[in-house]
Image 1 (tube, rainbow, N blue to C red):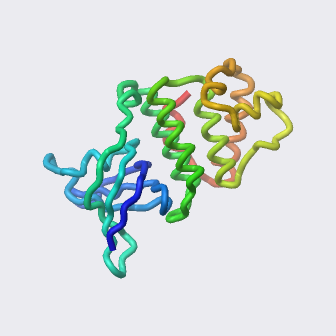
Image 2: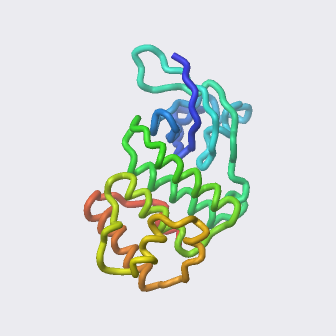
Length: 208
């Protein structure tokens, strides 16, 4: 069976000598583990489509009786050049992708989560980093995954808290840096990911 879908690469890892297993968060089918054959060779034609933080239009082939699709083609819609020109922006983009990856079950479509990630990447690509972006993104991803803190009573003021959860990225960028509120939010994340889920976010040490 051949099928096509839009997707964002969340993660990749080597497979055998020349292949990659690539985690692609697709619009229509959710998170998929895809085999990209021969992309680690210099002549690998689909290499660009297998790189982390890439948005593409993919074509996959799923053999009858298998649950491990192979990428057979596609085109890159954006490699987010603005992000890749700044190492700290790239770290933040990879953090976005890791958060979505950790909070998303396999083959469970979530157009809302897909739109959140794609919108956040476009915003970061065009405008660069800002103090509250990481925390606002994570709060929204948690909301969409059913683990939200939107009704938390203590901490930042109500309008501030609502902007983090639902304001435009411009509004989030306009929020003043507030180390005490940031510490409060980071404490929520630490208790949730580490204490409740037992997850260590590998990209967290590399973002502010």
